[in-house]
Image 1: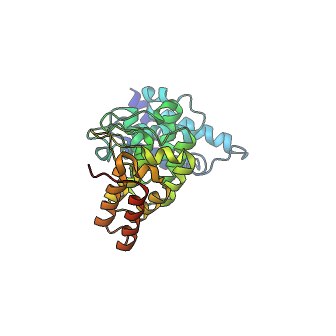
Image 2 (image 1 turned 60 degrees about the vertical axis):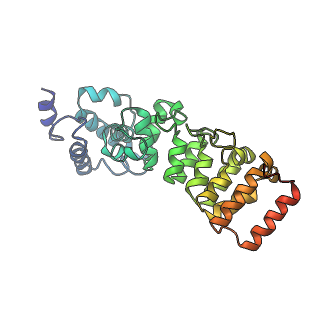
Image 3 (image 1 turned 180 degrees about the vertical axis):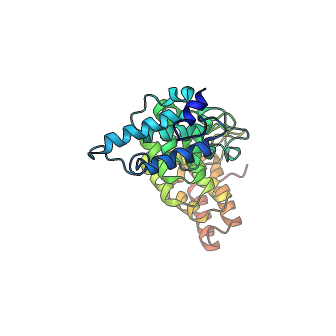
Amino acid sequence: MATTNIASTGIVLEVLTNDNYLDWSALVKNYLIGKNLWHNVVEGNLDPKHRNWKSKNGQALHAIQLSCGHHTLRQIRNCETAQEAWNHLKAVFSEDLKADHYDIEQGAPQTDIDMFHVAVKKGLWNEAILFIKRDGDIISQKSSAKGWTSLHVAVDAGQNEIIKRLVRMGALFTEKDWEGYTPFSLAAKSTDDIKIVDWMLKQQGGDDLLTMKIKADDDKGDIPVLLAAIKGHREMTRFLFSKTRWFTLLDNNCYYGAKLLSHCINAEIYGKCYVSNLFSDLVGTHRYDPK
């Protein structure tokens, strides 16, 4: 009965379901465009002060609510703008938030955290913000398989603008995943983008971020500069080395300094003369006991 009533409006063929979002959204979008209710109403820059905006927003919101069916209407009945309602439905029903989920967690998305992380990974901020509005704590909640927060996901995907937005909303670079990686150490390992790492250091306690270790059985987990060197990231290694204090490299009987030198040689991150001088400085600063 509901499907018949919806079809009689001439907007869609059937109410919105988990399986028909692409067809449903195409029909509703075309209808709204035809009624001049799409641009700057559902999509684009909203201008509530415009003399016709209130009327257009009401008409567009009514059409979306009318087309989604009784059960789905419960999710958007309190939305004040057509854009908010549209983005919510896209976040919940769109395949865009499901297709690549295997890259983040090995399995199909079943929770809000799953879909939120996919939105973050793909740079779909309009969709991501809807999850945050419903549950602000979702920013720091961890995924089940890797223990990643939304900041881990954004860093791994290189979504720099979303990284900055999440931090402004309270996300922390010190949160560790199940292997002990912070978003900062993940950035050191996965990218050569010095600008975003420098920005991270300036935002949240540089020294703490530079010395946080990943998990290891002997309490000698790698620190960010080592993670960068192991991956052969030349610019990142040089940058982090310039920021890491000497006493950190001399810790554990010069363990980190010696390991860093070894990886710098293997990856040819520094020239031989520089490495030789660096090693001399380390030995001269600290009596190294190979035991």
